[in-house]
Length: 507
Image 1: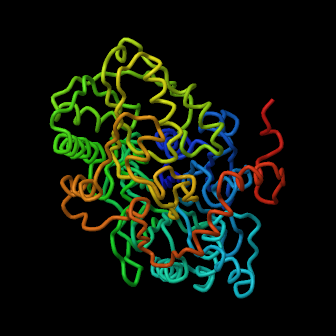
Image 2: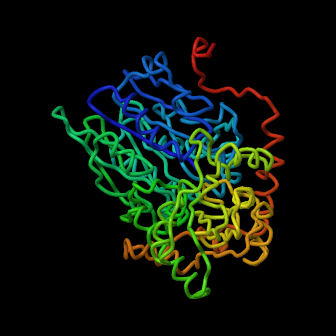
């Protein structure tokens, strides 16, 4: 999972991209990067860490230019090394830089094609570098002078070669800003404009909240299989480039990944989460009409909206029972169970008075590995809770996600191969409630009725790209489970690439 932003403006863009990345920080806390273009040169700063830690005053001063792209990352395909942070760059043709959110599911095949047929070398394990080189190769077929139609033709061929869920933003040296979204629209991307008197400026980003902070007016989401090209004058060109586009956005964006103040594919995330709470409340009331719940307590932050609606729906008191340390990252993406367990205790602390002697319903957005839930239930009991029930605003996460969320190994998912009751027993809950998948879909459709289909692969195991089988999942698990990641992280290999200047090294 990552966050991307691209900006073409009438003034220096470094600060605006920095501001956008800070509000997209929830999409990636592992690494951050920015590349700008000025007078025919690409300027880069990227490193591991939060946005505020990666970019200092001296870096910002060097990131000149009126065009730029930015990226925040959680490691998915590839390792967590600094060399694999984004944006990436290739010098041929034209000079292209690219930032990418998502995963290519046929990355290995494309690497072979790039080497044997396209005669291009891939130096990292990142599928983002693969996507950049495929785009570069296809763009290179268009000749020295690019028109919008040439760029769209190149994107059309990219769609025919690349499978998976992806949204990408790129700078083409001297021509402008390009972005495109996969033919199924799995990963989100929006664009908008502002005019402060000197002409039209355009921002492209993973979520609409990035546009809000910069004072941009949201135009719309990119449609599945659509590309946008913004020329150096700020003129917008769009075209549908996929052969058979079909909007099937990732429903987990609404459950957990996106900020509640974002609008994705015409649906306010805040509204969809409210509906999730109401639907979950309906299920609890139908299955357990004589419940003895005294208080509903959310697990902050992403479950608050759903939990409040659930409590009101049940007519039960809502209380904030956990205080969150905001300086600890999202735990389900952290590599290794030991690290996750440690982080939960650092992240949350219980307010004893809200638990003592009460039957408590804890509400979370989802249950992935179960580590966090188990620890939190134990914390609630230590705080004096009489009984601890647990509700998930999402259905059981039983299957790996291959389109850009770091849930690669089915064996690491607590609900995989287990019933709801078994999960409840494992995490130590007195009773457990999951959202029904049809109710989850209905919750999103009630906010935007035009959302006909979704990517729900983490819940139902149906991979909409049609290229995922047992062999693929086995290979994915072997390469990206916790043990594999730990081995990769200890390699300590330095990769050749565009590097920051030597004096960028912090004291």
